[in-house]
Length: 150
Picture 1 (cartoon, rainbow, N blue to C red):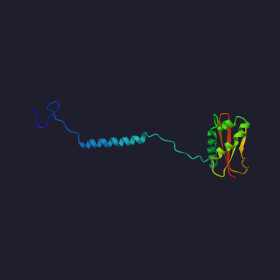
Picture 2 (cartoon, rainbow, N blue to C red):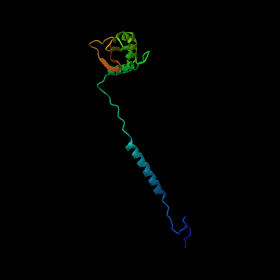
Picture 3 (cartoon, rainbow, N blue to C red):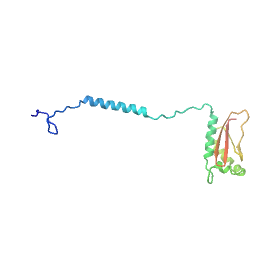
Picture 4 (cartoon, helix red, strand yellow):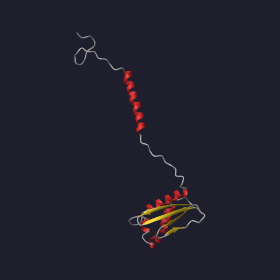
């Protein structure tokens, strides 16, 4: 005989209980907390920026100017610096352009000197001046840039 009010889908006379709403809420809250904790635990660590105290603002300006000089396009294929290093006459023809590109990457009032194997552009710094320097290598050429204030 079946009890009144209880019926099972299979038609058998077994009674079934219900899961408490409080237990369901506790399970969802636990999953949420575990998900957030796992998110923090599994997040990759990004390297923090470290300050290089050995470089000076002049060195940084020299690196910026060197990057600009290395990336400046030539009239033809390659870079301006690579084309200038083809020969001494090519360097002399492009020295003013190189100096203009280099000075666009430094503070106003700073001087830039560019030295390569085939030539030199700009004014050399005085012996008592603080100087920032950087080197850049492009095909067929290595240039050293010096940045200084009078």
